[in-house]
Length: 166
Image 1: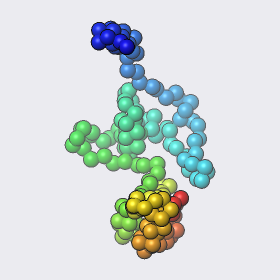
Image 2: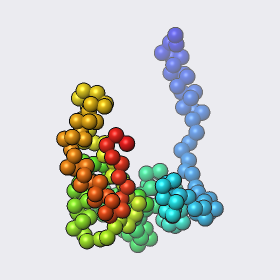
Image 3: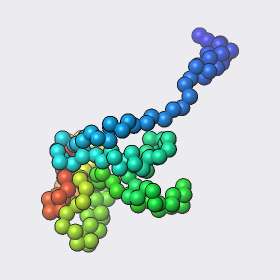
Image 4: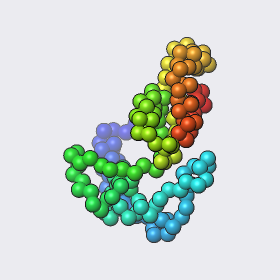
């Protein structure tokens, strides 16, 4: 066992040797690569050039993700906690409990199909009560109308649909 003094000395030694926080910078060559969004969407690629154009200063990963998806990063006045961001997502993933409202709002917009790759995943309306197989069967029965609506809406508007139990 270590004494409290030994632990303290060990902790201090580890803290002294710990590297300082650094930021990773993407190389210019990475923006030229065409990387598929997924194996199912061979014609959809990640726009690395837009992301690199928006990143002018070192940032955390979360900041890189947000700033990399700004609609017009150079002309947006951003103040933390106050500004509304205009984003251009690469993909949209919905879960069954909220996709119902999202699809109803999308339908009211009158658009023929989605603008970016989008999916609905049916996994949040399954309640864990008895056991996996029985709970899934119960959820399919109770939420049949919801799942039918989501399935037909996804087919009509070009969204991917992951049925319950996928």
